[in-house]
Image (cartoon, rainbow, N blue to C red):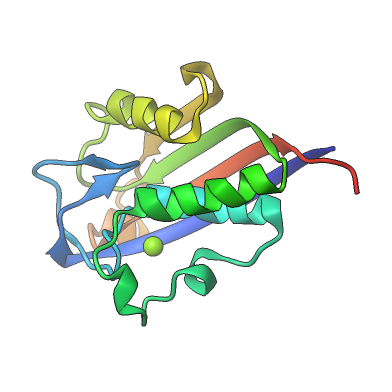
Amino acid sequence: VPCNGFGYDVHKYGQGRQMKLGGVPINGAPEVIAHSDGDVLLHALTDALLGCLGQGDIGELFPDTDAAFDNIDSGILLSEVMDRIAEAEIQITHVDLTIIAQIPRLSPWKEAIKKNIASLMHLPLSSVGVKATTEEGLGFTGEKKGIKAVALVSAHKPCI
Ligand code: MG
């Protein structure tokens, strides 16, 4: 049967980790505060996958109080959840992603992010949407205080 999962994540700018989006290091971008590597896009995507699974959220699986996840590559968190997707025999058909930030300018990075997400998800490029937008100077992204990302995953899961 068809199923969809939705994910949302925010990270605050400040002295912390080099910004990574979809596993791609974004040179010259503000640093983000995080326990893991702070990849807001992979976190939103991972939560969307957990939504398809009906298995809670990323904070529940990988608590930020656990030293094991200190500065962990969010690609590892994603691949652990992808293992659960495979176990549940869920077939991912499409992912659609939007990054919302005033800074940095993301258009030069979108293609590299898309390619890396397609490779992490074992999907063709035509099944991965990567978009970037600003909030026109409004709110915390507009004030350059942080970044957010949303993810929608489309899939088929077995009937039970
Ligand atoms: Mg996060």
